[in-house]
Length: 262
Image 1 (cartoon, rainbow, N blue to C red):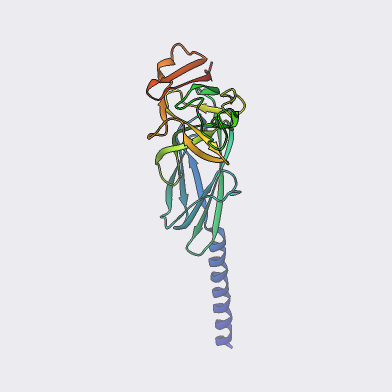
Image 2 (cartoon, helix red, strand yellow):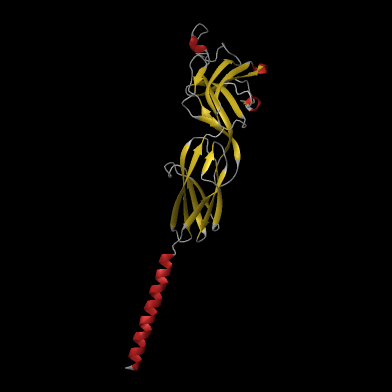
């Protein structure tokens, strides 16, 4: 009888210990915490988000569109990591982070960052005055008497941008591609609704091409290089709304219409 009572008591104790152990496990699931260096930034301002996890992170995903277009991914981390960001569009930005532990348990958190204009410059338009080979034949299937022989123009802008938030590497990246103007046309583009904001101290690279069947058929800057770098730093005080850039060695001249911050 005593042995039976002892076994029952021991069984109850083991059950209670097991229950407490399960409770502890359930109350401490794998989770991550996100700590942004700031919650409000201006255009092109760099900032970081620090990730800390309760366990080692096996896989990590980062997205700025709630993973609608996938996201940046990396494998094998410790229990902490630092993400790098900057934005060149205005408004509220939601950054989503998913992490998976060694047992394939996933934890997800979000951070909301507010982006304001600050002293950012806004590009409202571009007008090309001349380019290499202007008024000559770029579409040889048409005779010179047919305006379709002229270049169909598209310009592009690139700047140094942060690529993957999992690293801190900036590289030249296409920032904007204009629509195509057929047969030279007015050679003027209105970009005022495209929200082209940038740090006025940052350089830009300008390119201009002839488009054939939807792809670049000829470089109109007679490259290499297939771009020319422009800067706004000489105009920070005078703040003109129209800036003309001239590169006589390739007969390139164009105007950039800008809006300065108040």
